[in-house]
Image (cartoon, rainbow, N blue to C red):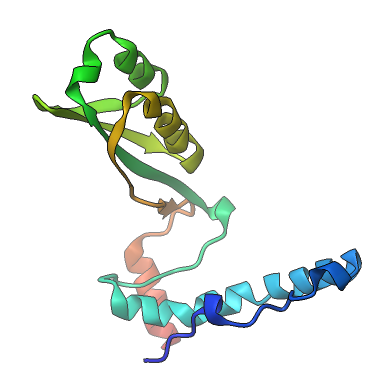
Length: 154
């Protein structure tokens, strides 16, 4: 299977300083129109690599999405109540407390999980993990309906 990495492609913008703003915007708009085609070409490869029934492409307004972030900090930072205050203010929760560390969970959008990361930095973050976007679609269509539609197309 041949995978083309876009980061290894030559840039179309090697001479940005010589391009007019209009030319630059036209080129960017032209590239934007190629994104759906590129994503649709990548979906079969994704389906082979990841254990999924079927991958779909949806527009931002068609989905509800969140991500989960886990933060590990030293337990000795619990002494003055500041950490608990940050956790409450960011609507996060403590998952586990160990004699040496605690794990905090925050579910939300990237900006929210990043804000908690910034707020916890002064306490010393030992580890940090973020899931990336997890989404469901807004349209009320059951998965079995999607799969039947796919079968009829093939």
